[in-house]
Image (cartoon, rainbow, N blue to C red):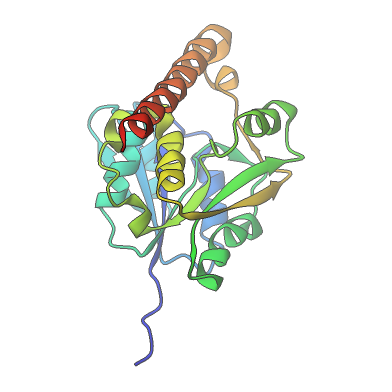
Length: 223
């Protein structure tokens, strides 16, 4: 019996991204591999949902801002896809080829469980961040079973990518890095100004560090 093709859903978690999400959705709609695009507006107070709704995508409006991890979990629970990709709503310079390169390896290699996009040749600050702290990228595609046993996503905030990466590492899952040449994303300081951006960046770093410490402690307790 011929195997049913994998269903592929792309989840775009978004918080107040009315200025940028349209450009990302324009690109995603050009990728023939994708069966469904799901935007999770995480308590946005701007026109994020309205802009997303003007595209051929499914939009979930969260009443309150629960954080990135919670938004991603909401998207996961709303789809039965075999392969789930996560794409940030504020990317610059992405192409349909980037998205295809992220997903296609999972279709080619049944042992590969997750791919992670890495900015190269975009902007120094975003390239450097992903070089210093590998696998923090919000651009990733994974098989649904990768998420098995990972039940606390809603509490991870901006540390969600670390939580997923550490979970995959603990379970010896095969992961592959995929270059995203000439792509980058809007900096928090550009969105929120110097002070607001700095506060948001410190919150992001705090969430990341918290997840690194939590996952390390979990590994230490495991016999």
